[in-house]
Image 1 (cartoon, rainbow, N blue to C red):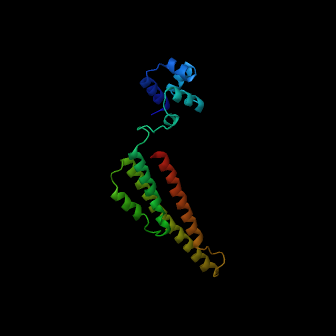
Image 2: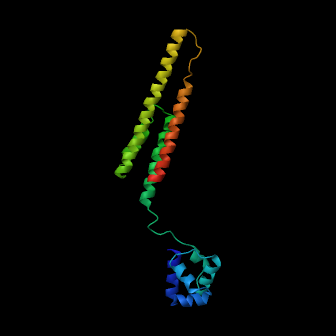
Image 3: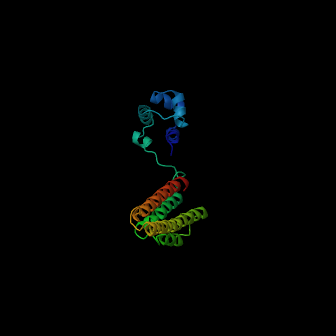
Amino acid sequence: MQLGKKIATARKLKGLTQDELAELSQITVRTVQRIEADANTPQSFTLKAIAKALDIEYESLINLEPEASTVNPATDDLRHFMILFNFSCFTYIIIPWVHSLVPMAILKKRMDIPAAAIRYCRTIIRRQVYWVITLHLAMLAVFGYNYALASVKGSKEGLIAYSWPFLLMYFVNAIVILFQHLQIRKSF
């Protein structure tokens, strides 16, 4: 319950008008009206005076419970699932060529989510498949370049180490996964 509602309810239960509450707590009627309308945030000494006038604990006034409308377990559960689903793509570090099977299996087990979330999960999987294809093409390009250079020059000078494009692609995928995490936190 909001603070203003809590004070108004306590005042009415006590059988007081706003004028009487203002007089008992030694504040103006306008201040009582603003507080009950949640138009301003009162100072702690004002709340203590109101609590004393209403014969209630000051702590009970400031201990506000969240409203039922602000807490939605279904939305929180969906966001949690989407975040874990996205982070499951980090399995590329361990099994880079077939890591997209992990999120696919997770999605198959959890088809009770909204259509928009399923579409976004499939987009995440598609991006991971594209990453695997791009990684292989990059490695083939490096192989082709090194092979052509070694064939023409006959030396190993100027060859590209395979680790650089490999590490670059790993770094790019980590950035993509973290970017998706931000999108999930914003959208779901």
